[in-house]
Length: 111
Image 1 (cartoon, helix red, strand yellow):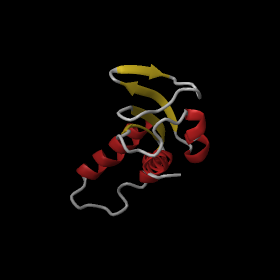
Image 2 (spheres, one colour):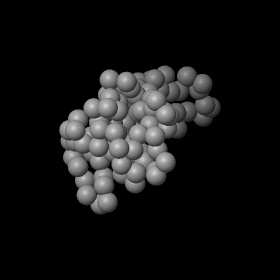
Image 3 (cartoon, helix red, strand yellow):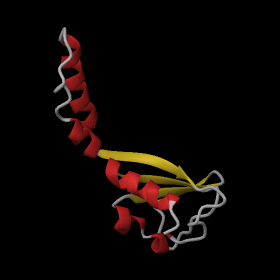
Image 4 (cartoon, helix red, strand yellow):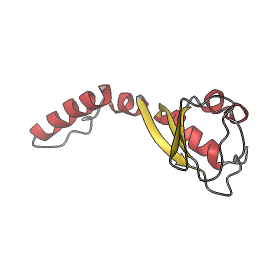
């Protein structure tokens, strides 16, 4: 993974120095912009419960993608636009750090 290589290279060089350098992580923006996969749990009062992925339109609105939905220990991999999200579901979301953050904000909102 590119992120790991960049981080290891920069942090190892940091450890070899006697004094910390404020510019040690010059590629931090690359690391943070690289991909991330995270989970989001829908509680019972989530505004988006009952919506289809098409209605939610998460990818177009945030740039992040729901790659799986976990429903009562049953995983729906690569869900279709017709699949709905319900309370107690766990969404597996992937994208850049920024797009995943935007997705979480959207899922927390009443929009």
